Image (tube, rainbow, N blue to C red; front, side):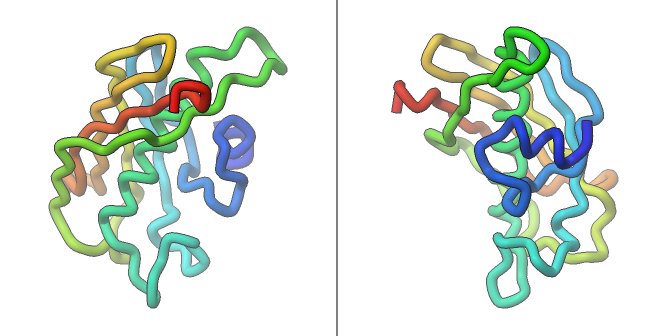
Length: 144
């Protein structure tokens, strides 16, 4: 799945979509990749810098994509939209992301699933370098 297809499934639009590809997904886990940390036009940049806390958004988008793929009812059906409800136990392993980092690998493992949303364990790495770990809570709009 490419960036355009992903952007059609998450509520961000293509300019704000931080995922470039889907590399694997199953009932409990998703793995995506991104080169958006290198993009000069990344809307999350401030004064030319991309803070590593922005990886929460990258990983939350992967989790939202997993939720959308998991709840699609068939080809052409629109999956429900999920919103970021909370971030827990966040560990950042560097302050900023620079353009020299290799392709980002973004993972989200579903820990809890309910009718109102899900909790995902998230991580981001660049090659063998761990950049972020934590948890996100995704909620359906009616549950927020």
